[in-house]
Image 1 (cartoon, rainbow, N blue to C red):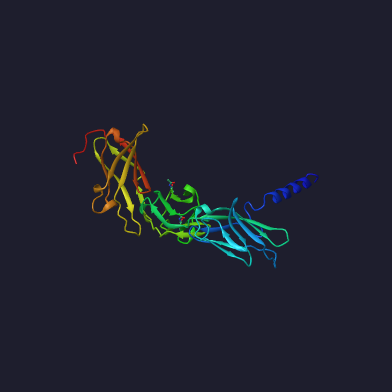
Image 2: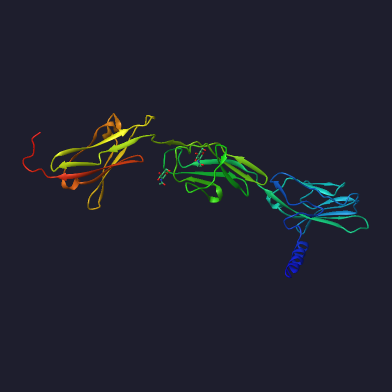
Length: 323
Ligand SMILES: *[C@@H]1O[C@H](CO)[C@@H](O)[C@H](O)[C@H]1NC(C)=O
Ligand SMILES: *[C@@H]1O[C@H](CO)[C@@H](O)[C@H](O)[C@H]1NC(C)=O
């Protein structure tokens, strides 16, 4: 407990020696925000009933306005300042980014102690032209997509909306580049959006047009193969599969066969498009000629579905049948 007292004294000391660095102090309010091209009102709150002998306004160390029976605006401020004699308040117009900084006022009542005040003004470029571009708008389920948001303006904060709810990061959804890029690593059929980007700074905000993703997916389909097929060396054999289509009329445009040999090799055999025929995947199977090198595990891959057949080769004893 003995240490608490010096600490309090220190805090008090800091507070008193550097007031108004980020907050208003004395007769002025807390920090003010304004837009480029806009205006700001520095409203003073002097002790009620105060009459003024003089009022002086500064930007940093520079005098910008003095009232002393007459108005004395500094060079470059003549057309931008309106002074309110009733309170000592000041309006500053046609703001530029360079008007950001510390402002202070000293109100001198006749025969009394001056009433000081200071505050900070931050001028921002308003948000405009918020736009979202997508790496693609038509994609397959389980692929990835990146949306990036661009905007004019200063000190921008970004927020992504999926319909009306805010998008938060997860292992599937990454928000990077200060929030301006949204990457869906593993797209699901439910990620169609519409996605919008909302950009804000302390003086304005803007929202992009919606971007809707078209996600192609396979619905309630099944793929089956016999677990094991035996073929005889030198003879043709068919590796049969059964494809059960989903309620949606999906057209399978591509399938992939792989053969994993007992030696651990993996051979991609067919990437077929035309080979599926008019009926698509309904056709009966893969015809192969049984050779020593075709023994192994056949894997059929359709979209995200996968089925396997172990193909075993035997040698026939006796004459090979003629049919
Ligand atoms: C993508 O998500 C699906 C379903 O959640 C999952 O089965 C699949 O393994 C994921 N793929 C990747 C590359 O993470
Ligand atoms: C978008 O919203 C849908 C519906 O709530 C949700 O299923 C999906 O996961 C969301 N996607 C992202 C990227 O937030």
